[in-house]
Image (cartoon, rainbow, N blue to C red; front, side, top):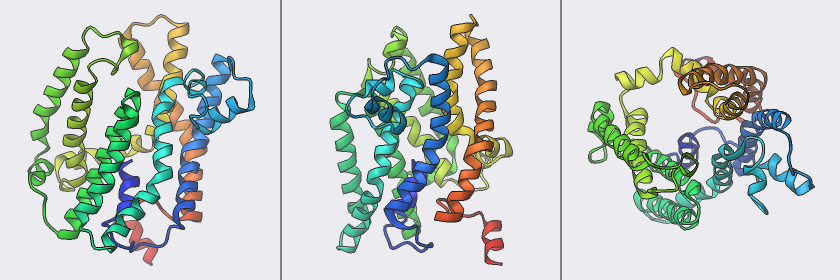
Length: 322
């Protein structure tokens, strides 16, 4: 989400990179990125658990496209189940992201300041999420992540354009250890608030506490990851070989972990530590399989036909220039 927001936002000025083909090309790239692996994992989940009451063409179209109307339960109650909720929200976000970017750049060209233009768009987006999230805790939780990601991307763009730090950001970015007390307190408060909760009602009770904890932890962990010095320990850890190997697999791991858990629980009575260890091994292996077979070839196709969605590394830029 942060990468896509930064791609669209830039620094609020006309892009300096090669044209990306506009909104249609952006949507196509996102569809190619999201759907093929989802179809494989969802198809596997449905083949194992059964299609249940998926009978009409509309039902199947909803499952295939993740379009929430006319009946969201058709998607949530079959196959991959509730974990596709975040994907539904993000796909809707991708639909409007090019228009949000144009709104920001249009406002800046019309004479508004960078902060005012971004603040207006982010405020409107947050208000929209809050309105719809008032009846859906899942939507509100995903919204917090999206708006925070966009805000940090806008902050990064502002600092780059003005070549100075925003107040309070430099210390957190350069000394991420300062975030540890915030993480510890947020975890402790969240754990205390949820200690008697029904697991099936996670985040539906004490929503304000959970949401505040999510926002706090997201901010203090993302800021040094995005804005911290590249030679700092935090960034070096995130850029280490294990992380770089794991990074491309995260989408597949997210999709595969749910059917792995469900099928294991239904067939084997494992204690929780053993189940967690099993999932930590099997889900990445399944993700590696789909990455090699599906995601990697499609990434090459996207980059070749529709341009890159991420900046090239310095060595790659030099090779391209030569």
